[in-house]
Image 1 (cartoon, rainbow, N blue to C red):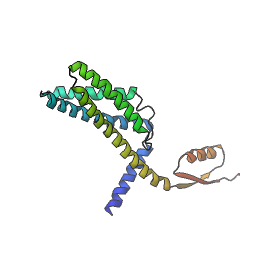
Image 2: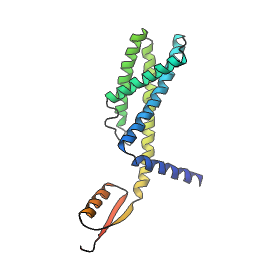
Image 3: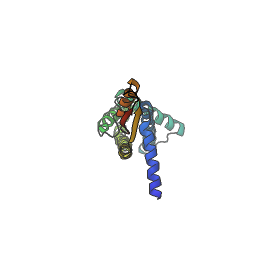
Image 4: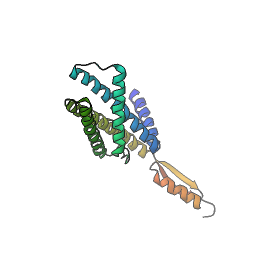
Length: 193
């Protein structure tokens, strides 16, 4: 009984996610990527402290992490990660994430090694790149699997519709409903036809 309630709640959440506008879905994706990038950046600053045996103050570490995250998101936007907005059901998203995170890692790794004058930063950025890429791919693939699972069930729940009026408006309504997999137009009801 409890699993049925949880499953039903997941399906309702998925149905709401599927019905969101493209712009809102895009903002959700960017927000999740920003949180992950900031977390990985903060972790990178802590690793840098350990590797160079130095202490970075909390405000400086937050500013560095925010700057790194903002730079990564800027690079993600410039490399087109959010432009095609491939459906998360599509495994081709792997290539977009791979290309964007690779460009970000190379540019930021090179930039940090020049600014800090330490070549030891490059391997650390490489390791952080692997972590960030894995996290970004994981949430997209898990989210895609979740939406696929929920969408299959939603597709089975077809609402059968009878349209009153077979004129232009009725035909336009039928054409619009044909695009929605959850609606099936059975017939038209009209006095004149």
